[in-house]
Length: 341
Ligand SMILES: [Zn+2]
Ligand SMILES: [Zn+2]
Image 1 (tube, helix red, strand yellow):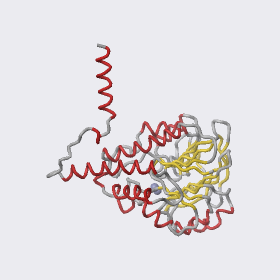
Image 2: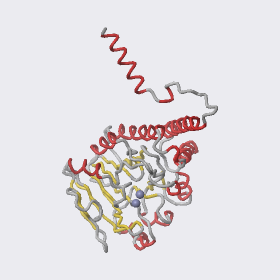
Image 3: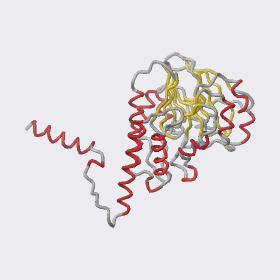
Image 4: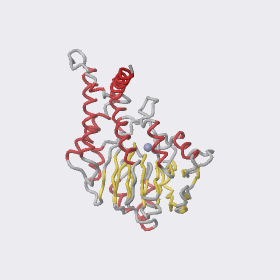
């Protein structure tokens, strides 16, 4: 009896974990064009996921990796795939891999994880910092794109959270609460979650705002906030130096010509930037990068699914814009990471 129960349990477990494709879907498509496209998208998401694993982030990109990324551009600009099981399965697979790596020990260097959109986690031996961590949503849908259970586990691994501006694809009060309740520092622009207890608002309009953020570990981050703008909205650009002396700059949704008042000379006013995490659609990205003079450029905000397809910035577009840039650049999909020595 016990054995029969155990076997039944195993069978049930297999049914639950078996991917859709393994569940013997019908391959008869005549007269069922929608079903055909659904199966095709599932196959394309799966091969993109496998392709990214086989060809992880590097400077520039081999053709195999670009094929995987451009395949995603095609899928993510076809709104029939928005919020589908295939789409959600892809994101879950990617973010699960990211979490698995985040849960391993890390001793040397700077590792930059891209969760989704501009939600980055940067990690050194002595600090793990999140920027603009939002679960986000597909346009017209309510379910979070990044599964809440995974987001909670990622947040639990982070020591601090920085929020650049008050748009929903960058600020998620559920995530903010996780940090606040755990007694971890949250730093935001003054008009973000204005009355929320536990959020420190920083920015000086006429100067760089330099300060330290104390972590629960007792170690500190050195932070410089540049008063940038996003159209007409306040957008903090953060330059954060970890206790291990690695410096990361996150630009949020920096956009608008007036940012070029400070961009050309910012490199002389802040610590040497190891990784510039820049919104891929910022105006004149090729002209902006030398102002920061980073060791590496890593783009964010590609294929933000809350936008209409004309503003779901494609990976191919990032490669096109960066093609003539004289800096090392890395274009990452969701749930990927890149290590800087
Ligand atoms: Zn924005
Ligand atoms: Zn945005």
